[in-house]
Image 1 (cartoon, rainbow, N blue to C red):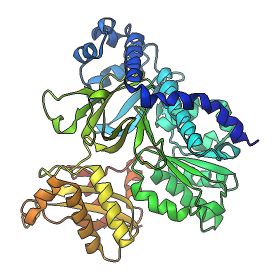
Image 2 (cartoon, rainbow, N blue to C red):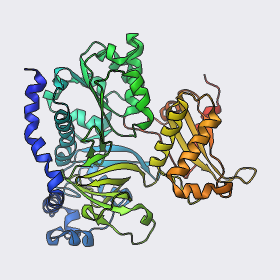
Image 3 (cartoon, rainbow, N blue to C red):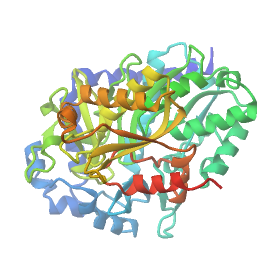
Image 4 (cartoon, rainbow, N blue to C red):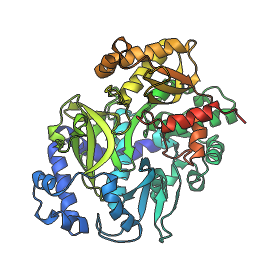
Length: 506
């Protein structure tokens, strides 16, 4: 019997429990809310917001305001300085530094011991539970897991307190038994210099029996390219013949899928998406034939949703899970055992199913272009690019887009800066295909493009090779969970990138 066959038995009880996501969704969520409120009732936040007298969802919604990071950052900073029982019982020692920013400052998301185990590690366990259920012939545990993470540093020099990428916090606190199955070694995994880390990971894993890889698609691709350079092989399965799955998350996989499929041509290769953010672990692709993700309902996360078309309203409607409608775009609001209360995470989702509750990530509440009423979201952008690539054979590595509000000819348009791993033969054709597909996907964009009256044909600027990595490196954000801002109403980032794109390469 293989080691995987033995390990699979550990996951069987949880696999049966997970079936309740289909039959008892509401009960699971209300149990979570009750547990969170009862546990935090003696905290400072719980006392101020009457947790002891909160007996229903309506009480909770009435007593607790919707929060962004701005409203909680004062309490979080006190926690970082060692104060206990502020947002969650006890002292919180770990803080995930989010790639998102508020007023150009990083967010520091508290990761309590409860949250670490009942959200983040539980999510990782369930990913494997679903994978083994769907692939009973797997040999996952008969080799090594290549887990790509970030780095951490001391938090205000408090003993045992850390701040950094969530992935680094997870690696730092992982059960020592897991290290038997994981590569690279811990010291390599936690290196802050991504270029050095990339090279060392490739060298350490080159001759290992790697069966599965986990990480952000863009950074993992960079590591795998280095592995191929060192090996001299053409395809990754020649290096790791037993590689069977990539557990990916952090950014959309669509722009990278074709590159991975060219790098890994083995028919037994699988891809499984997860929605694990600094703020929590929220979704898992439970069915390999359905790219929607199952919303995880029995972790320490209670969900609420705000229709995105009401975000600018002074009194937007907020609904719990049972109030969502299929196909509608929502901003996600969470309450967790890390002390985030009715917290707007900044992501937008749309539900594809209510039985069970499945969803897709459609973008970010701040990462869209709505300069002229076109409401272009990331889901539109990803699908439009995928179509243009499919039609032309091109491959997109990185991109960002922003509006040109008015040029010298009083023309307004969207400007896309794209770094191709495989360029289209005709860039104008690629741009036309993208523009046409965006009109098909988004009626607001189509209306603004009508007869070029409000919005002219989009413009594509070709980025030099390595531009986005150079830009991230210049900001100290190369590697880890850092990502490129895809869509923005502001031209700040794209103008910086365009300036670097025009500079002669050294």
